[in-house]
Length: 355
Image 1 (cartoon, rainbow, N blue to C red):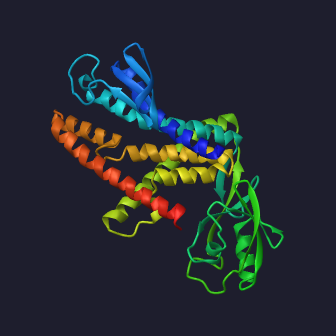
Image 2 (cartoon, rainbow, N blue to C red):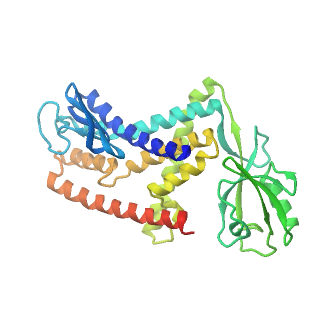
């Protein structure tokens, strides 16, 4: 129950932070912010401080910021539309920048307290763990109900510290019943399983993909310069992942179901990771922040990247796209994103509840 509450408030926190990024830059550039709301209306509590109404609302689905002149396009003092393009771009970028800053802060903390890291099998590291990261369908591991995230502690009483140990033992014991000691979250349990002698290419006797992980720690000063580097490195990896995803869509190739995850799937994954420990959870939050930052910057109308696209067109044409045209295009893409979210959520339900 505590993990579910933690996941809920973590997601809400990320959304509030995103909106605060827009709010912060609007205030910096002296744009009137009409309202900053936590959750969605109807309101429970409202208080006006200066020119801004701060509200706490009833429906616990995110947050919002209402910036004067963002939709009405009023050319007057304190209006978003009255600003030069560069300053409007900073306000639009504010939400994504807040995600990047948060990720850097999380990595800065993690690098000092211990960051979960995938390492080479032969590398000596503090607290080595061999974890399952994928379970193939209709494999012995699948039927034994092994899950991604499970840690293999022992096989037949032998302590496991390398993925190669698992591979060696299951190969030798193919066709025989073996006993595994596993850890899932805080639960430690045993499973009996029979490695198969014949298996599809790339699957192995158990049908699992393994990685060796460990905890790496750094000093304050090392963490200070490593955190931005790690943020940049992971951002590039995520950007590459999005590129591959859209390339497959364009080529009409099959996209793995797990690569398209809705709010339900993200929440479920966060819940699973929360059971692995604080370090793993914080590491995932940092990664999720980067995913959200880059997703929001995709040049798709209805996202922050779409707004930047329209600002770019305005800079090239020396005049903005007409409000009617921009609203129509944004409306179409907003509808498509809603359909995508519904499709992803249906996939989440299938994976989580109907498998």
